[in-house]
Length: 150
Image (cartoon, rainbow, N blue to C red; front, side):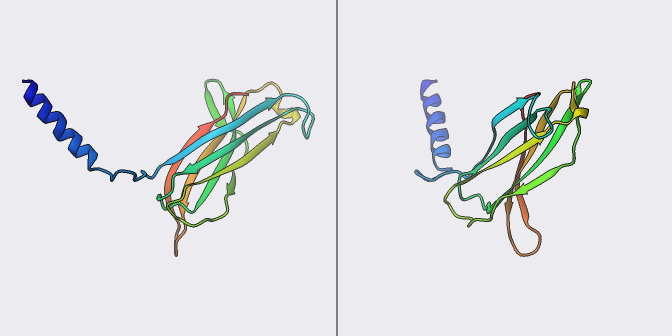
C-alpha cells in the first residue's frame, strides 16, 4: 500500500513540476485599495471628504499595457449599496507589454455636500487591465473593491 502511495505522489509531483519551468514566473494581476480616509468635516464644501487610492499591479507577461479605474460613490440604502454619483474613469499612461511587471496608483477624492449629511457612503472601484491593439482594445482582467463604509 505504501509503495502505491509513493508512486502516485511521485507521478503527481512530476505532473505539477512540469507545468512551468523552474524560475519561470506566472503572469498575474493584483488590485487593492490603499489609504482609505473619511472625514465628516472640512474639505471643499466644509462637510468632509472620502479619499482612497486604487492600486494596480501586474507581474509582466500578462499582455497588459494600460490600466483603467472606474470609481463610483455609493450610498447605503437600507441594506443595499446604490450608486450615488456618476461614474468617473481614470486611465493610466500606456506602457510596453513586456515580462517586466508594472504598478500604478490612481487617487480618488469625493467632497461631501450639505445634502450628503447623515448618510453612509463608500467608494466603489472597478479595476480593468487592458491590452492596446489595432481595432478594439482587449480587456484582459477586471476586478472590484470598495472602501470601508464612511
